[in-house]
Every structure is written in C-alpha cells, then in structure tokens.
Length: 304
Image (cartoon, rainbow, N blue to C red):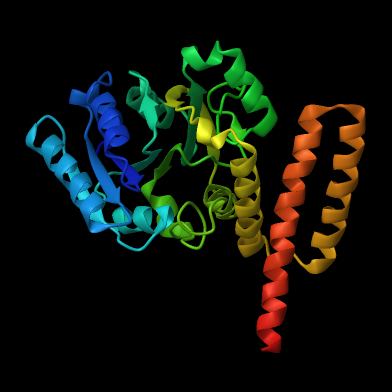
C-alpha cells in the first residue's frame, strides 16, 4: 500500500479564509497523482456558521477533482475538532493545517518527498511571511516587539531533528497517534489557548519517535493587526501561562520566583532601553501571573 494523505483542517468558521486555503490545495503541484483527502473539522461556534462551512465543503466535494469531507464538532476546541476527524481519516499520513494559512504550490509534494527521504515519523513544515509583509517595515517592527504571530523559518537542513512543534503546518504518520494518543483537548485554541502542539511533541519524543524539519513544505501565515497590539500580547501570554500550567503542573515554588524574576528583568531592560528583552520579560510576567491566579483559584476551591 502506497503513501496516502489525510489533510485535516480545523476551523472555527472563517469561510473566506477556508475557501482561499482550499483553492490553494486544489492548485498544488502533483496533487492529481497523489492519494489524498481533505477533512474539514468544523468547530464553528454556532449552527448558522457551521452550516456555511458545511456548504463550502459540499461545493468542493461536488467539483469531483478533490475528496473533501466534513466532520462537525460543536464543543469548542481546535484539539477536539482534530480528534474528531482523526478516527475518520483514511490516510497513512495525517497533515494538519490552520485555516488561516495559504499553501505553496510545492507544499504537498514536499511532504511526500520528506517521508520518502527521511526516517522521521513527524514533520514540521515552514510557516513564512508573504513577501509583501516581509518588506513592510511597520509589520517587521510590530512583529519584533510582540511576536504574537507564529512563523517557522529555521536555518536548518531538511531532516534536521526538532524537539517541538508549531501546529499550523505539521504532518504525522498514523501509527504515532496509535502509540502516543490524540491531542490533549484541554489545550489549544478554544480551550486553554496554546501549547497543544508543544505538549504533543513531548509525547512524540517520549514515545520514541522523531520530528524532522522540512523547509520546502511551505505555508504562508496571514498578518492580522489585531494580534499585534498590547491587549492581544497580554491575552496571548496569559493563555499560554494557563495552558502550560495544565500540562507542566508548575508549583507555587517555581511560579513565584519566576514571576519575581520577570518583574526585575522588565525594570532592568526598561532602564536599559532594550525593547525586545523588555517585552520578553513583560510576556513572562503575564504568563506567570496567570499561573498564579489559577493556583489561587484552586486553593480557594479547596477551602470552599
């Protein structure tokens, strides 16, 4: 039996973004000669939006040049939606995309080449900026400050071993899920907010599997200015702190010293005028404060 791909796209209901992504998948090189299916894991928050996503899926199915299937998961959570789709996927390799990316024309071909040429069971693809954004000084300035939009552009050769994952563009052999289990549905967008990919990568490595990098499997991430603000910066780091508390189980004895260190370093780098390090310290402050609040809630719950 040859290699086959199940492309799983979890969406919270952005129909136009999803349409753009599906158009891109329909146009990738070598798709006609590759055994593949697309599964839309519909995690829209209401039935009206969910129906619009389902109708879009039907449109692509009716084109007859692509196998496109729909899976509905009404409970919020990207991981829940992905986990709903995985048992129904028929491929030997599961490919996961966020619904706000666009694929390069060689994206699918490069994934196939990676698994043919390398012994790894999991692949991390590149997540790049569009040239229009890469050449915009205002975009670069905001990204340098906040770093709240994920990009993967390592200066590594294909097949380089990695220890972590960024879930917007990854591929996983079917047997990995059989061994290490599904995604942790307490984490990720719609639930804890972040860290579902990091936690999964830790289980992958603990299970004896390898993660490799494939820079040619390229997707492009969209710049959303709403994510390049002080408010989103705070929200992101607070969510990250709560998420990591779930799977790392930090204690008060580790949280408080890290919180105090973040306050000290924020003050120091503010005085020194080091903008990037100041914001790194500020992010850590939000991160550990969110952890501390969650711990305090737990203590109050025990008392009640």
